[in-house]
Amino acid sequence: MSMNRKRLLIVDGFNVLRSGSRYKNISLNMPDYDHDWLNRAREMLINDVVHFAGHEWRATIVFDGGGNEESTGESRKVGGVRVQFSPSGSSADKVIEKLAFEGRENGYEVMVVTSDATIQDTVFGLGVDRMSAEGFSLEIDRYFDEVRLDETPKTATKRTVADRIDANTLAKLKALRDGM
Image 1 (cartoon, helix red, strand yellow):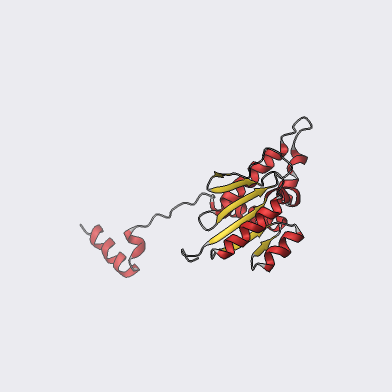
Image 2 (cartoon, helix red, strand yellow):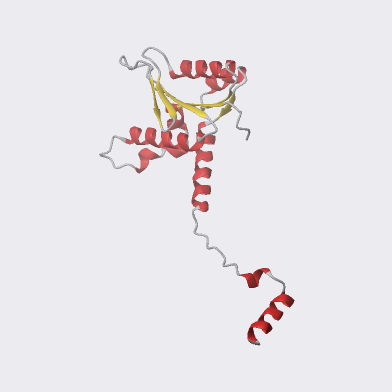
């Protein structure tokens, strides 16, 4: 990848949590008394986006805060990823569409992760790439599978001078050594 490419990743937070198999199954693995599964799923998504984006993407995760009267729409950075709740009275969809439009206007290659057909259609009209929530879940699973494979211990082979010279020269050197 060219280091000069400007890339922007926008993730529809709650849509991915509800539609991506990697996240929606978290509640199934939680005990009955644990009602904190949404926070755990949200933290997992944020960590996954941090890994996925790496140094190649500027990333923003947008969660819907429109029904929360106290939501100001301010964002914060977590591991280099911007996490934002939409402001009170505004949907995450509008924030995502605005970010995608601004990204394209500023020369970014933009990717929106969502399974919301309306958002996909809208951003596609702007010339933005799309990835479904399930597609993102599969990409993250594949990423972590590759990381696990890379962690297998590797042993270095011992390389000696005898391994690097031809057999005829090695025989002459051994004869010289043994003749002393």
